[in-house]
Image 1 (cartoon, helix red, strand yellow):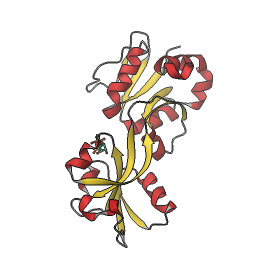
Image 2 (image 1 turned 135 degrees about the vertical axis):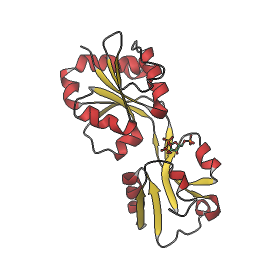
Image 3 (image 1 turned 90 degrees about the horizontal axis):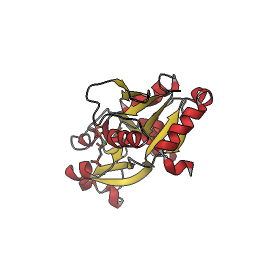
Image 4 (image 1 turned 60 degrees about the vertical axis):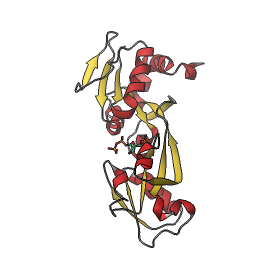
Length: 209
Ligand code: PRP
């Protein structure tokens, strides 16, 4: 049975495609502007924005997919996480301007504004600590916001740390660690059990041993 797999474009793409190729599925080096392709073994790949992978899987447009845990934390979608694929490691952190010295324990202002793409995670973090905040949802280039007075703090992903360093921002606290996950549509997992387990075993040989 041929599967349809949601593949994230962006930071996870190269490693996800390499894993697929190692699993015998000839994913392209670069999907370019292609939206989908069918590989020689009949597997259909959907090239998706990372945040859209859970929706494609929940509604069965894809049987399964590869997606960062950070996307799953923010997603309300009903998908089953079958495995941690281990690559694409990054950290979700609270960060601020170095000059504000929050990383050295300087008190937060009374009215704290936090900018993030990860509003659910950010809200949970500050609520757990009983710190009242105003959360501002952004969709990218979050590191700009504390530099121009939009926010006191940001909640964002850090991989190499280069973006923070280049903007003289520092980590105030780590919220969570993320890696790429293999997710499935729960109904498809039953109806295509053999094909999905076989694919997972090839994508993540460690999981099968
Ligand atoms: C992510 C994240 C940081 C950056 C961190 O952004 O939001 O901005 O990568 O990576 P680094 O620690 O290796 O510098 P992304 O590239 O997804 O783009 P965006 O700013 O448009 O969200």
